[in-house]
Amino acid sequence: MDSVQGVLELLRERGYRRTPQRECIVEILWESDSPLTAREVHQRVRQAFPHVSLDTVYRNLELLREAGLVSQINLQSRESARFELLRDGAHHHHLVCLACGDSFCLPVCPVDLEELERCHEEDFVVVSHAFELYGYCKSCRP
Amino acid sequence: MDSVQGVLELLRERGYRRTPQRECIVEILWESDSPLTAREVHQRVRQAFPHVSLDTVYRNLELLREAGLVSQINLQSRESARFELLRDGAHHHHLVCLACGDSFCLPVCPVDLEELERCHEEDFVVVSHAFELYGYCKSCRP
DNA sequence: ATCGCTAATAAGAATATACCTATTTACTGA
DNA sequence: TCAGTAAATAGGTATATTCTTATTAGCGAT
Image 1 (cartoon, rainbow over the protein chains, first blue to last red):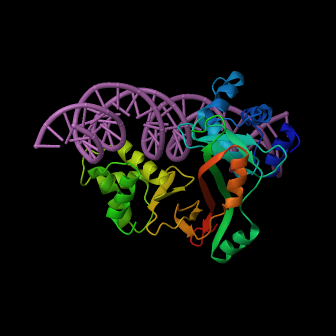
Image 2: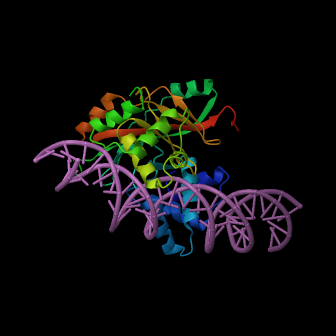
Image 3: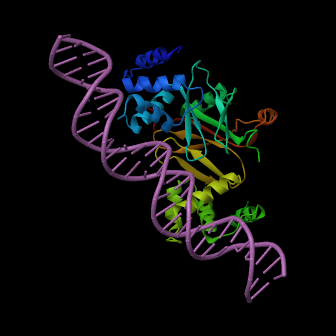
């Protein structure tokens, strides 16, 4: 996971195929220095693949999320989610500003293994989780 | 918050008006023994208010969530969220089954005040948060 | 009770996301 | 290299959610 090729390699090991559109989507995420919405990703992919469908973008973003390579940031506005590549593989979460929609990395993850184990005991297998803090950033404070 | 009237009273104290549609939505949530989707709420409200709009339902559910009276459970399927009234006011989160969409209450909340204080220091005012664990329940385990 | 202000609503449009199906294409093994 | 197979895609469609605007109605003050 040290490069775009590394990401595609990881996907291939998990049985996913290497398609030009998928490679393009990963490159776009890799080169972006901020989380992107699905629409933003789609617009950029279209520069190389004018006929790429929105479904392809959504499908690949979900695939990358499920593979643990992409973090999905749930906003609470019309553009309801942003996606970012976990370049260093470091799992983390975000602060989301309800006014401007900007997101800020949160270095902590609230989930500990004890909780997960307890869930297993209670007959529920946990495979992923979501966590966001909502509020107002310095610029938008009311 | 010991009855539907109590919920409406709390809302009034916060400056929200008491409308028949809003009262109906709160009653529906109050009487349901499981979390409902916005569409399910809408269908039930229509029995009393045939011309109620979906927007009214969404607006009131968001209002109740922001007031801390309703918990929103983010699913990861087409019906992307369910809502439940916090009858006893106990803040909590959920396990969500990715197969059947059922949700199970989680008695813990991962957010502690220390974290929130730290965010304040870093110029971000936190007003709410979201947390869900995703996986597979006993019946749906793959 | 009535007036005035503002929140709340209905209706419809706009947008985000997920689903469906036929077709294409990446990969596997002969 | 080539054929078979299953995954991936494009395009269209369906649904969920949010926004816009004009109208209605709750509630405080008179």
